[in-house]
Length: 132
Image (cartoon, rainbow, N blue to C red; front, side, top):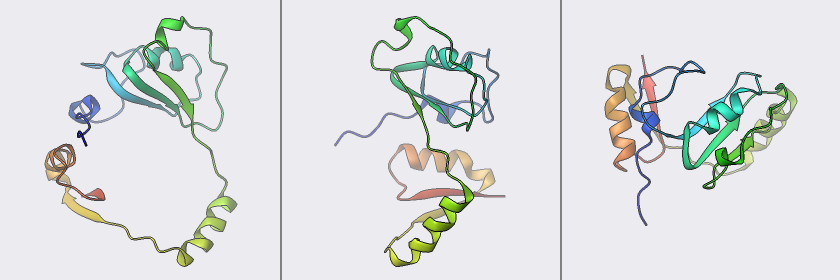
């Protein structure tokens, strides 16, 4: 099975980019939390073919019309379900009855780049956790 290619976002400077700031190379995905519909076409313009723009907000203003070329080459727009506190409580009440096994590897914050390298190279099973 071919390994996924490294995400350009993994090598980008840390922190969120300004909405009008172009990334150094096309992104695999863009995650929007701002409730501004105008950001959707702007984000689509920055993702690679096959890339995904995900809206993580509970509310968003209308998404304006945009040219089809921004969706061309299998780009997509998705939203995530926003759950309530009660949904979370009900899920957590069920969790002890489900055999879930988690794997984590802690890295000191100063070794964040090593954690990314381990992830890219397939040397990490589970989740990397950065510890201050």
